[in-house]
Image 1: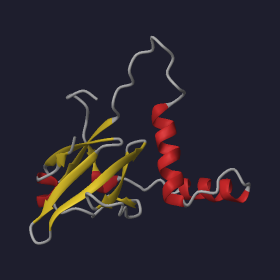
Image 2: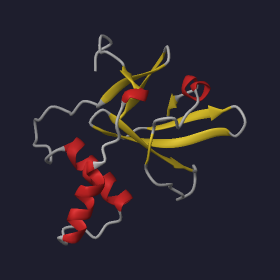
Image 3: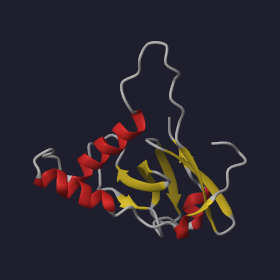
Image 4: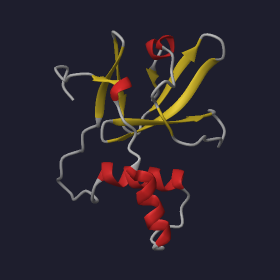
Length: 137
């Protein structure tokens, strides 16, 4: 993404509901036995990574999308981990997956295997939290 890219109004996005129906169809026809959250990670990761690289292929670029909430803008990178700080409850850690330009997040607790379900981002964070957004290594 270039710095000239237009920011997407986060409030204008519509969740990609078709993923749930795609998963249900795959369960019904026996092509997956994964739960929805695991299936979503595998599906979006496979779509992002594409076929296995061949020697000499260029390194794939990050899928980065710029969003806007009110007058503030922020970027999210597909597959990245982030932390935001809530004024009352402290840091909130999450992973991000992009389904096209639509961001999905899953909160986690660092140092544990605790991983919460994937949720949509609309109305999930306060403006203060988004202003504290930091990508983790």
